[in-house]
Length: 239
Length: 239
DNA sequence: GTCTATAGCCCGATAGAC
DNA sequence: GTCTATCGGGCTATAGAC
Image (tube, rainbow over all chains, first blue to last red; front, side):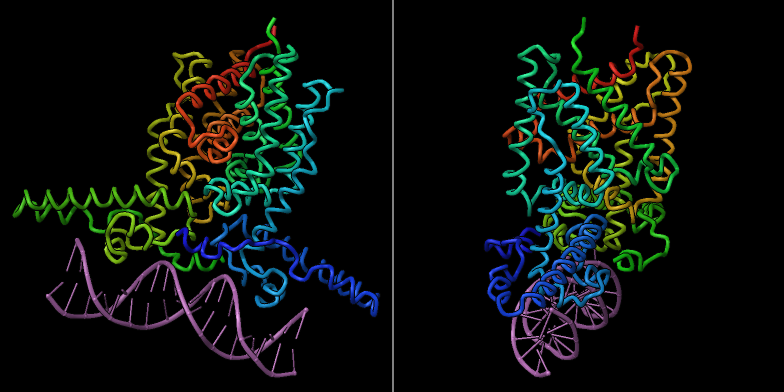
């Protein structure tokens, strides 16, 4: 099982196969045509990534064949492999993009000019919005973590864990400053993460309960209201 | 993608391949030997299911080969296929057992002799205990749901959704009786589910944050304390 | 960059001897 | 019930023509 995934332990650089240096040198002779080509390449890359994230979310890493992604995009499997040299590189690029988009949205909790209440409200809003707008990315990330993060663990260690620890440290500072109640900061963060994440990961089950085809804007608004209420109640200092 | 999974749309009965009627007739001639055989068969079946749930949790449905499960159990792939006629039947049996064990543990919220506070505390405790004691089952279920419940959706509709709706109805009754605050009952249940479930599904990420090899009893105790606090605070009627 | 062709492997499942 | 043998098919990835 593991051998299959790890039989290529060489450094897999999830970057564009033909780097921009090529573009730079060729741009001196045929600037316009080359720019056009570059645009096409970026467009196709974006197309591939967009379909890949959906298929990985629906079928998992092993359950998704590059042929099926290529079919959705409308290119040949071999052509897809020209842009992404291997399935694992494509998968890592998908997760890179998910993390980048997530990091973009999540403001830091460390802004000292704002109240903990305000910051937590924004944090919950941002994470819920990510679940709503990028459910496939959330799900691919979730499946990777649930399976033990066999492929993307190192990147999670580098990019996600330090951020979570920083958020926990912020909670601890608030507690020591008497700004919020002395709740367990680690599990508070885990709970916020769990509640917001689940609106992407478990939406299938939720829509079955609600008897809807998909979660509506109203559902997310009500979710936000309840989660914010619960978290603010948890950190409010009892009289 | 889908065709592969659904190319066998005949009714897949996830039951023991050789039913007990065989045992009953043979038992009249060779009662002891047959009972012994039956015990061996049950033991082997249990062994297979135990290893299968771990592998499905770690590698997903498509990522797990029946050969790798057989290897773990110590039988041949063909022998495994004698007990479970196909990979999909084995997978469904795994999920059947997960649901059965879960339903066993989860007491109903409908016990009218107990307070909402007590019932919710027990509910959270039971669900957290399931995450702690059967993390693999929880993860297999989670992965199935995240991927859209393509294989097990019908069973979820039949067995899980009605229960969740019943729990929500109980919340609504409590609200109408003035026993708890008028929170959104649906999203309250989603939140409880999310927070408790995540201690199985996201334990990989949690242990990285905590810098531990695995979640400890103490971690679960602290989680329970915070989740119970948050939920009870949410349903407490403001003065 | 896109195509055809195919190598090389793993997989699920079956057939049939014992 | 367990074994050996194997079929038929899908998969990733590469080779090489254009």
